[in-house]
Length: 249
Image (cartoon, rainbow, N blue to C red; front, side, top):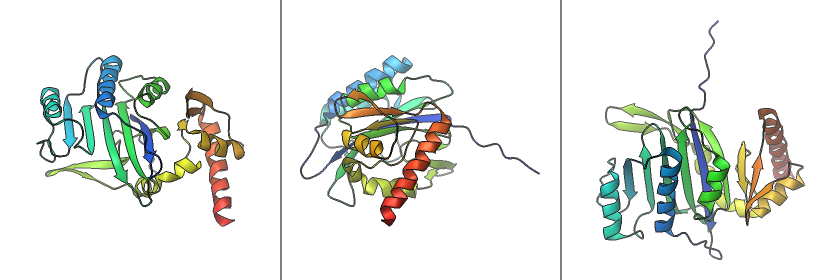
């Protein structure tokens, strides 16, 4: 009998979401956000990312990346209004990605901030990181997810290197959840994780099904942490059962 060793998580990603609709639109100051992210990289890792991409009319060909000097130069010339996404990384160590005003299947649009790092080489206080980032990125929801090293953090999908570049297997579950992300404003969560960053409506919903109390991270954003795997599994099962019962009612 052969036993296959399960891949251990090597990549940790903090994901924060800001949700807008026709009646609410949190202001995200892109230049301020970017400078805050770069400062955090310097503080946490002792360096800035070395490879960047600007998704929009900034003169970077698809599949290519530029260094920090060219990155800053392009933003200084054109400004921050014309890109829909921006990202940077120190390959094999840490990185970030920002997506702005993505459409959904409803009236809502959302912005996503992903900050990732290698668990094998970095030790980061993700709660402190989330608190700092949410000060410049108005957040309605977030969580921390751990992935194998051969996954793309933003899409939570496994990548494969080919002769022509990198292929990515789509994560359909993530795609479906993003399309209905407006539900977080009505108290729904994507799931339960070791670290959960919740708006007040989500806290009330989880409290109604008997899940543990939360602490306040900042106004309108709360922290729910599961300190051990068993308590997390129990909470996940309880929440899933509640959702099934609600769906079948």
